[in-house]
Image (cartoon, rainbow, N blue to C red; front, side, top):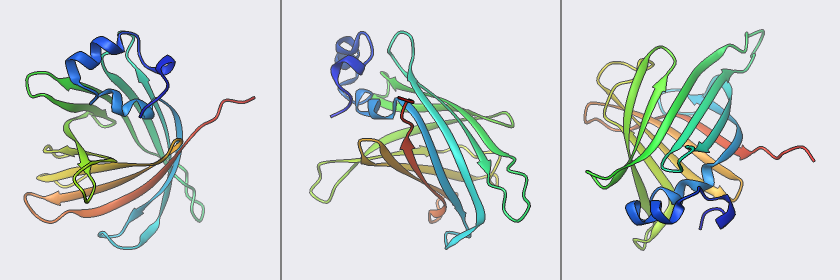
Length: 188
């Protein structure tokens, strides 16, 4: 699983000793990605708000955490502007005290969120190719008191899907966006 040994961060053996393979399992995210997605209407069919996303994920210089940066843009629809929808900078770290992965993210507009990261299991109880990032803090783009959950599902060596859901307090999760990412290939 993950990238070949040459692509893993320096000190990955030391990192593995401190985190198991939890952080290294997300090594497949390292690289440059392009995505297209649609906002959903109240968890229903796609709305007329298609958007693109550019995502870059790198290991920190010391190889102890992942750094991500993304910019989402609304696509020009019927004369729309293609304006920036959101910008996001994130750090995925292993919290030794809690023995789990966390993401600390900074969003355009000044919002900071912390999300717990869970590896999902398949029907037989084995690790699946999916991870959930669940924030217990409200984002500035949703109503106060809402929680946000993002599920990443690896669908191939160079592809993954992202589903974004929100819930009010302890209410049901409502899907608000579906996004498909593909790894950018360097020009040859």
